[in-house]
Length: 365
Image (cartoon, rainbow, N blue to C red; front, side, top):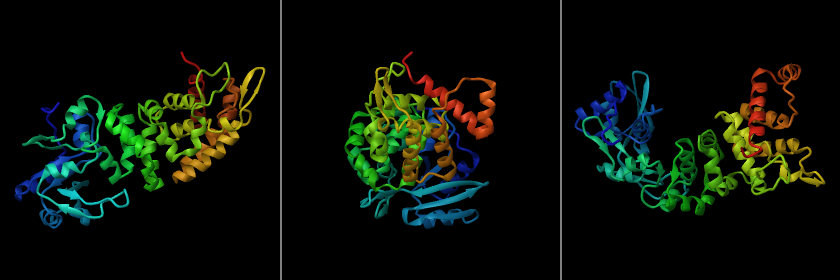
């Protein structure tokens, strides 16, 4: 894997060449290296250099330069309509707010810069002529499908509590395993998420939910999910006492999530669709029942999504799907037309997909 050649897009190569021709070091770094080594197309291409911010600006005086975050050493250069973020090698100071460093110190050491990054798979740098720079063995972890913090997991999470959810998100999206020491710190330091804004949590949790490993990750780290969405904790271990359900409410919920297409509205609706069950449970000689649980689930979903400060479109659509998910489906053309008339084409299709996933997740095959 370490011998794999990475070919940056022409604008990125121009950025590297411009800095190197001016006498500076320059590398692509972080997620773009990780994705390229996996054979996936990077979404963004970031660069790192020993050039200071004013020196970066001087190198690119013939290009459009955006002073994104000069205090943290970050400049965005637009080359052929592609924005490229270029950051000076730096060492981060104390993270008093568990979100961002109070101070940064610029350094000439690439290794020191990579040491401040969250996970080993994100702490690699590459230059087409110099090859891969990987002091923390990220390529080995990438090959082994492992998410591991750079250095001390407790220190990395104490610096930025969002990294707790990022570890889970990468494990879900990449279908990786979180290394034991890192996993232990995720559980131990989950309350650091209370320092993180709802918007940042929503972004990471949405990506996590849409990952291939969402069911596994949210099973293993249920306590972390309940830290940010306490409304869901009553589902955990709640026996449905019903011959049609092989799983407790939480396990069924995660299987429904996994059975839905990986689209944010559907995955959020699946996560919240049965949240009202523990609050509506009754029993009789036929077993457990949850009469009216969709109405209560809708109320809980509304509170949860408001707390996450999600966008209005997702909020409205998820609540609609949760409210309607328990509709008895007979599969007739007449009923399908009625649902389409009531909800519209897109919402009707989403409801049918959610219903199919819900039924699929009821019993073990």
